[in-house]
Length: 177
Image 1 (cartoon, rainbow, N blue to C red):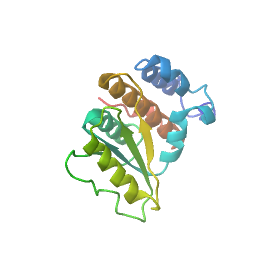
Image 2 (image 1 turned 90 degrees about the horizontal axis):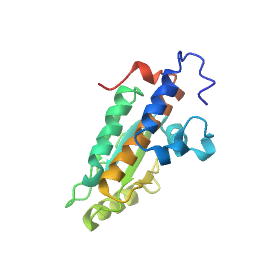
Image 3 (image 1 turned 180 degrees about the vertical axis):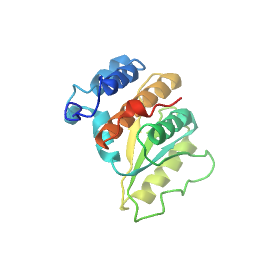
Image 4 (image 1 turned 120 degrees about the vertical axis):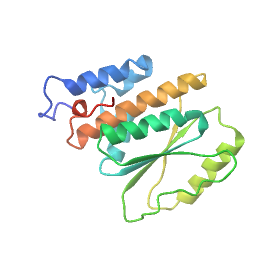
């Protein structure tokens, strides 16, 4: 996929993917550019995000990772993105309302969510069922909350870089500071 993008000079994008892999080395091996798209979850997510606005839902447990996805998509992939942290006590009814617009909806889920947050996710999934877009539910990997935050952030880095590349952008030119 990356080899076809001839405008990238000095392997800056490959270097960016290598830096992202260092955050979560074992699982990131499945997200490297050498892994074909049909086996690479990050590439599959990027294909779903091309040309779309991104809405990332999370509970409080993964709010930092959702915020990292939002910032990265805005700065690196040149995409409009919004992170929404589901409150514990009220149901979220913030599904994208502009039905004429193309959206990708990502739900970052943690095994450490309490039942109220899980109920918010269930209500949101129900609202989106049969809608113009189906959410992609990502269950965070990791034995503790810190590991899940790191895993979700690393996955977001890879998805952002692939989305930028597939959109004709050089992600190394648009780095977060």
